[in-house]
Image (cartoon, rainbow, N blue to C red; front, side, top):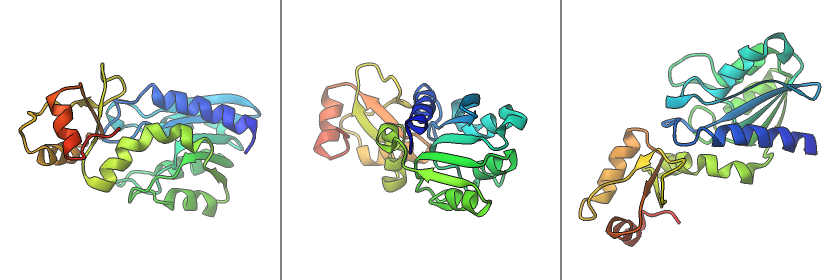
Length: 207
């Protein structure tokens, strides 16, 4: 890892941060493709979760992608639930020679499969670059993978969240959150008050 790698990964993280709250059920991912120290394309997950960052950035780079380095905030998927071409394959077919990844994706469609496909195709892969900085992008996504529920935090304005959690404090909150998790939500917000207190009492409020 070099200062150059960190600098371009920072750009990829900033692209993804700008999309937070708009891309569920998929996480917000940033992808920056660099050739000879120059950014030749960049993209982030589109609103609604598709198209993915890599499937936008790779075609946009065109021939400049050959021999380039791709900086991606989360491991490119090794397979797609839709059966379409995976993000790792997009990078391979674009001719990228090196991929730098911030966070490995534990979902069934990645979980090391994306990295392995890249390496099998002869690409150099470096993982863990600015992983701590990228963690905020994926905490809700990972929480839903682990629990089936979106995470809930207190916020004053909900910036960067998928939606506001507005259930009654007397409702079955686990059932409500499971329902929203099944719908694809990953990060919800609420304001201080009875609902936040009820969530905290049940261990459902993320601090």
